[in-house]
Structure formats: structure tokens, C-alpha cells
Picture 1 (cartoon, rainbow, N blue to C red):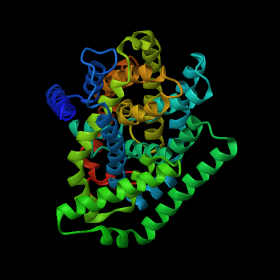
Picture 2: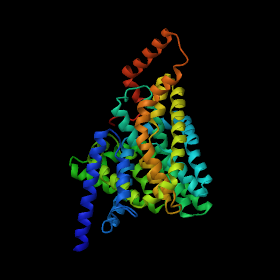
Picture 3: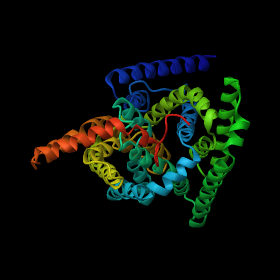
Picture 4: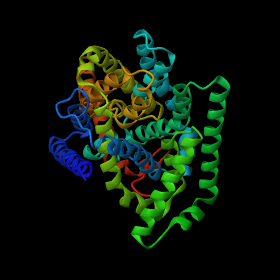
Amino acid sequence: MHDTTALLIELGAIILVLGLLGRLAGRMGFSPIPLYLLAGLAFGQGGMLPLEASEEFIATGAEIGVILLLLLLGLEYSASELVTSLKTQYPSGAVDFVLNAVPGAAAALLLGWGPVAAVALAGVTWISSSGVIAKVLGDLRRLGNRETPVVLGILVMEDLSMAVYLPILTALLAGVSLAGGALTLLIALGTVGAVLYVALRHGRLISRAVSSDSAEMLLLVVLGLTLLVAGIAQRLQVSAAVGAFLVGIALSGEVAEGASSLLTPLRDLFAAVFFVFFGLHTDPAAIPPVLFPALALATVTTLTKIATGYWAARRAQVSVKGRWRAGGTLVARGEFSIVIAGLAVGVEPRIGPLATAYVLILVILGPLAARWTEPLAGRLTATRAAPAGTAEAAGAVDAAESAGSAGTTGGAGAVPASR
């Protein structure tokens, strides 16, 4: 009874604090992720209020949080959209990988952490935060801009890459042999290919089988199916997160919309628990020694993400202002970086504090970069005085893009508001 009472008190206090922090972040206009991480640092080892009774429950909740994050992400995409993105956005995805994964890998090697940690830190610096970026696009009213499909296409490529990257990382962290790692990768690729094929050919049948007029039944079936598939994927060393993502892809239409609306509050709750859990296992005293590397890495990868967005938007023949907006929008890192770091801390504990500091910096800087990259770039290039007529024409083009391109968001790589 005493343990149960302590558990309820600790959980109640944590959830209440998270709710208050979320409201504070909303009023200040930025993502609550950094506040959740700071709460974890305060409650965890070396913090002001270490937890005892609820730690095991929070660990389980964190696992569910990762699964729900990936499930809801998968529900946003259809299999046909993913295939279209693969065909049209793969050059941008390749540039994104080279420019943003290499700095993380190089930093880990320079710090003497070894090749496995280099693969993990490469993922931390590579993947942008889909959640933060989606919110920023909505807040800045850019969903109709011509550069937005480019941004979303890059995010889709990153999400698809996770289906291959996470099994490889999991195999490396487990210390399996080269043959075992190759087998794991083949299983992952085969699973992804099979799910995409089934979703393309028989997605309606799957959705019809899962569909229910009862919100309760739909919630139970989708959540139960997701946890089951995630567990099986984990057993096959494919990653529970990838299994959940594939379940989301397989569902479409009204089922996807209904499941998304039902599961979003659960995702928000358990995702917040996940960020707290990551902070719990990071000693605040370990952050100052890695603060300078985190700042340096954040500076470099901010510039490389801006370059990625600029190049991809230029390839899509978006105007110069739109290219800068695309680059600034991609800067934010968040949930995926923390997921990857959480997997790697068992092999290289120092990656946890570095990833925490890195994400804290970029999850705050990301919305600011999305808002100010284009104006700052315009001011820096204003020294090249252009003829007035040229400047007016360029401004007219950008205004037309912002006002009249809502229809273009359904293009390659776009993620529609509803499926």
C-alpha cells in the first residue's frame, strides 16, 4: 500500500508539472520539449527531487511514448505518398544525410567515442523534428507556401530512413556480428517492403477490418495491434518504433483519421513521459563538460540544415526567399534525436548529456530560425543593390507563392491535413 501511495503521489506530481510546463511553453510560443527535458533533469539522478517509486512505471511509459510517436507519424502518411516521395525526393534525402549526419559522426570520432557512438550521434544530428516543424509551419501560416512540400518531402525521407537506420543501430549496439547485422538489415528491408506492398494493394481491406463505429473499439484494436506488432518487431531486432510506424502506414482513410484523433492525447501524455524519462537518466552535472561541443555541433548542423533546405528548394525551382525559409524551417531537432540517444546511452553514456544539451539548443533555436532566416539572409544580401524594378518583381513572385500556392501542397512529398 505504501509503495502504491508513493507511486500515485509521484506520478500525479510529474503529470501536473508537465501540464503546467506545457501551458507555459504554449504561452511563450515554443515547443515544450526542452521544458520536459529540464523537468527530467530536476527529478532524476543528481537532480533536486530524485524519484524512486515511479521510475519503473515511467520507463514502461517511455517505451509506449516512442511507439505512439511513430504510430501517429505513420498515420499521417499513406503508402502511395511515401512511394512518390521516394521517387522524387531521394536526391534531397541524400544531400540531407551527407550534410547533417557526417558532422555528428565526425564529432563522436574526434571525442574518442568509437565507431558505434559515431553512428548513433550521426542519427542525432541528422533527423529533424517532425513535430516541432509541423507546429512551426502552422504557427507561421506557411502550409500553403511553395517551399512547404519540399520541407515535408525531406521529413518523409528522414522518417523512411529510420526504418533502415534504427535496425542497423540496434544491431550495432547489441554487438552482433557482421552476418547478424546483415540479416537484421535484410529483415528490416523485407518487412518495410512487405508492409508497403500490402498497404498499397490491400490497405483498404486492412482499414476495413480495423474500422469500427465505436470509438472505444477502434482505440482498443489499433492500440492493441500496434503494441503487438511493435513487440514482434522488437523480438526480430527490427525496432519497436519501426513496427509502430509501419502499422500507421498500413492504415488509411477514415480509420487513420479516427485513430489519430483518439490516440493524439495518449501520444502527447506518453511522449512527455518519454522526454522526462530521458532527462531522469542524465546527470545535470554531466552537461557542462559537453556544453561547448554541443554548441559547436548545433552551430555547424544549423548551417548544414539551412543549406539542405536551400538546395532542395532550389532544385524544386522555388524562389530565393522560399529557399531560405525552407532551410530555416528544418533546423529544429527533437523527438527522434532523443530516441536515438536513448538507445545509445548503454554503450556510450556520454552521448546522453551531449544529446540533451544539443536538443535543448536546437529545439529553442529551430522556431527562431524558421522565422528569421529569410529576413536575415535578405538583409545580408541587400548590400548587392539590385535595380528597384527587379526587387519589386521578386517581391511580387514571393507574395504570389505565399498567397496562391495552397494547391501545390498536395504535390510530391506533401503531407495533407487529412487522408
